Length: 389
Image (cartoon, rainbow, N blue to C red; front, top):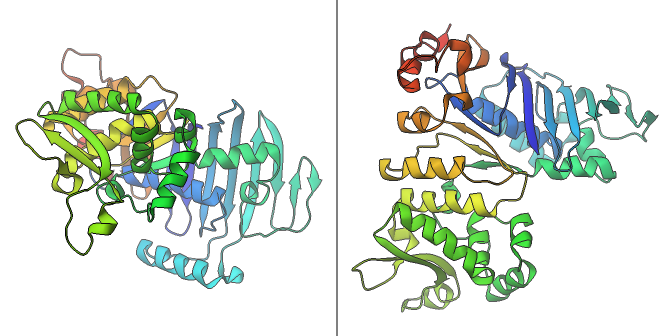
């Protein structure tokens, strides 16, 4: 998938995002609280809706290109059941989904899907038309993309939404989680042998890295080389069970893969939980560039979190030079990151009341003087006073 543009509204809170157009790399910049993270959440909500979630009061117009090259426009809206706070909204949504009470879920007011400018899906409160023919009666609580996913042209779109991933790497700093038994490890190793298989699997990046270590070790060494360029005091990386556990958990630990690092002038391998979160996150960022599926959209919130100054620049450059068919939508307010990314990638996010706008940096004249682009940004009223009540 390649995301082209989005118009979005949460009618229950009156939060609105005006038209934003995305690039292969989009850096959302703006003061805290202006709405950068909410833009990422809006994209994730659309992913959830495409896969069957019912979300109160949301209204959207979303343009994208599929992995197979089809230009699509998807627009729709759920009924507004009234305002609740974000916390209670998520809490109540979970209760509704867990209860299985279909009647409590908001219904879709309307939905349209255009593929290559042709209206393929058209629905209202009563009917769904697919290819200009009425379908049998289907749930009013699910999107047509979810309901019609067995249709070939819809399935491609449904599958493409799985390629929107949110990368905060919080789940990558602990155990692998899915490897419970030896036979499960072997099953995955036998199932995903080639690089293409590993990339297209739905495993998380950490498990993909383990599969690469076992089945495509030459490419794993290339990732290791890129990583050790950033941290030259680290000589090597391996992903293997720990062999030196002599306690009650020893039997389990000895069949469980852990990322381990070999530092210069240190005789033993250092297990992942003993390494800093910044080191692990850097490794996951590099691995992601190699191992996510083609046409993946990677959303990264506060890119600088857990990254030290010594690796921010190099990880940023790795993203800029990835050379793969990937799209990045990133938020940051760190000057090192903003300076490293050409201002042509920036979207300056501002908010007036509950209306959020994202504008290209060029429209503010950034880049026309000899000063550093970030210095111009910092002196820009729209940036420094990005929230206007």
